[in-house]
Image (tube, rainbow, N blue to C red; front, side):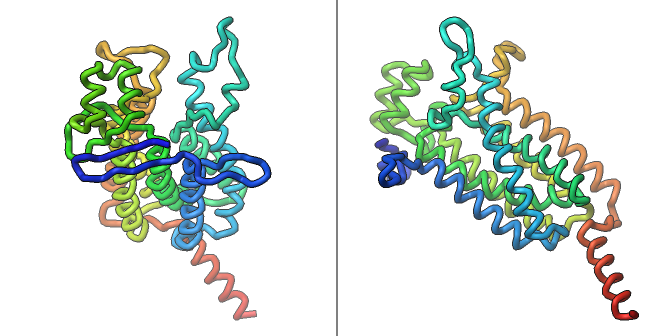
Length: 318
């Protein structure tokens, strides 16, 4: 059990990581997994409802999930482990595969799922003869939904928070104070300030959830008015990268790039990736909007509709 408070807002919560225990097996099911799964289910459901707008059928969405979900489960762990290898080494320097495979110990990274999903989607679209960019436009709606909900799993685990702050929405608690002291972010006086509520940490899990919610609203509006396939896809990487780049800079649990430094500071992997993808996607989006100004490219969904109309007309003539 963990107690988390927001003294500036007058809020306090008692959190239990375990949602329930499976009878007969005595196996705990954690809120983190329940929340992540709920986000995935809602994302798939809404994408199925919105898919026609992008020329993507429900069958193609469900079929793709059979490949994307297992790949993402592996990729989120691989991404984390690769940039945190020292945590999974034995005393002799060899890798402890038992620890690597224990998901319950924590250590997942969302960028692994994003990268794997893009690769799986590309292969799936090539196999099915679908437009990758049209499907990706739909898919990023699901990513926004899954991420804005999934971040609340971090809240239940009391993790993914930032450095110290005295802002009204600061987050405090005994486990937070202990973590900050053990990892050298505060001294004993700072630890006591967090325990008293005078000082807290940035609730970066909430920052990212709120940022993704705004992104979802924008991309939903954009999806109905897009000028070309891939517009929502580019916007996602621009928007998410923009937010993640500054939010990652606040966090205390970042993954670092093999000890490399830039301007004397260690390089945060996800912050670097976010900044690069934001710049690349933003530049591509601006160029494409300028290139297609005053005109609208034929969308994949429109081509499919035209083909269906032609087939229907042909059937009537016969």
